Image 1 (cartoon, helix red, strand yellow):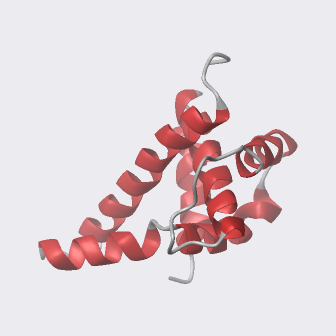
Image 2: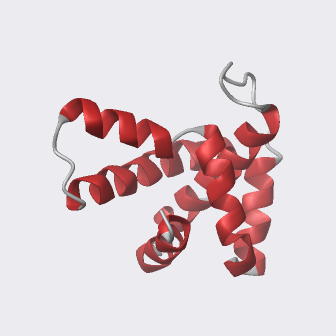
Image 3: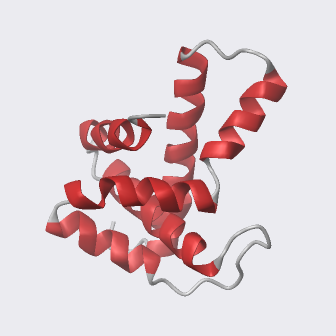
Length: 121
């Protein structure tokens, strides 16, 4: 796993986070395709993920926080027009963390952090 850069981890983590979100929405009874897409996008975007990471920062271990910061501080080539630079970097850090945990096989930890993010939503 040392050969995978932090942006590679974010690439994987993006898919993990989106799959968790899609699964949650389906479990919650949403079934119309357009509604599922709209709701998914509302959770899986830079602004929402930047807010999500604020919910879990107090619960991260030192190792997890270090990985998050590496992802947050990674040099990205472009930022989408609909996102602030700060939100995009925070989202990249969150995705890198989820990708890292996924590749380590720490599925229970991913579920725990995701549950903390969704608490109150």
